[in-house]
Length: 480
Picture (tube, helix red, strand yellow):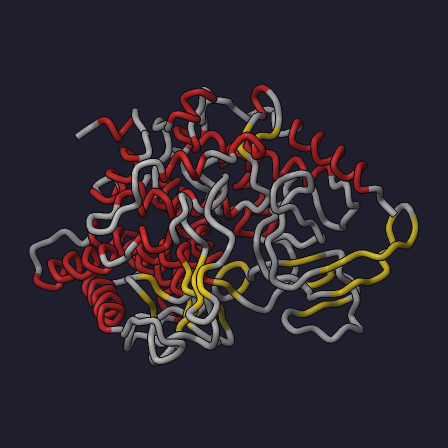
């Protein structure tokens, strides 16, 4: 068996290895975004866009959590979709009028959904929405939780729509009105539950989830949105409560020092909509770099860990890497033949994954394309080669771009799988596309090409107010 202390030591060395040639300390990815992407990348983008465009329920704007078997709507996927439609317009993949009308249909449907504290027959409570909704009715799906972060992801898509659709056409005026009203309905002080930090969720039977948004992860967007609210904002001090646990999140030294969170989505989601280049809060002013550079260093650390490969998984390499939340082969404990002899390894189904030695660590040999491609603006010099290498993985690239994940080490073809396919030669490949993983692939490519999402969101008064109340200064934030 591999000793856990050995794993942690290997992980620490991998983080130190993030300082590979090309890993700048001042946000080099910020200027690299003007470079031309290789021709093959356009096909990735269009196929990924088509996933949103073809799978949305056009009667109400609800977007499935996953396909090809859409069980329910993910409100987070709706947020990515509302932003994706504009990318399609700008790239010539969708007609402007059709995207406009679909956006308005989505917003009006959410505005009409019932809210209340009942266990069924409602879609949300106090301006927040349940994580999953029925694809037809929009009502709470089974016993899913009222989610602060998934509501935030959807609200960011709505704020994008309010800033992008800025014409005098009556439909565009209505988009702005309805989007701003929906975002303004969220009663953020209620979600504090009389504490200084926002709860992750609420259940009508059990009450608030004990875990809250503090420390470093995707929850930074939750706090910034709450601080920027026009009607029910979070109180002063909410950002200080969020950053209070930061000391235990720092990893690396010198040029590799960064706030660590093992799954890459924690370094990506907030950055899809907020341009953190050149703006800093008090913590990052003290650190000497911004959150964009932090995500760049985290991207290199994720890759370096996979290159070090302390667990000895199959397939990890310089260009095949990327650990984040994704589907997996299933929950199994199985004998694993490797270079040191047979041992038992644990595999997982859907789970967050990331380098050992970092917060929320987990490594079972499963790689997700969104981990590398969603980091494109941060580190194009390693993410573009990763995309090219991933195109060569057998069975991974299909109708709507990359399937969610693959695991070359899981070659147990005799096992009955809940999802995906497996063969003895190439291992396991997912069968589904997930909206929350498709979104960063498409939208971060748009940011890399032209700062597209960032430029639109800089116009949002809610985002600007949230950042300023959190103490961010500098860069575009100081400009009118």
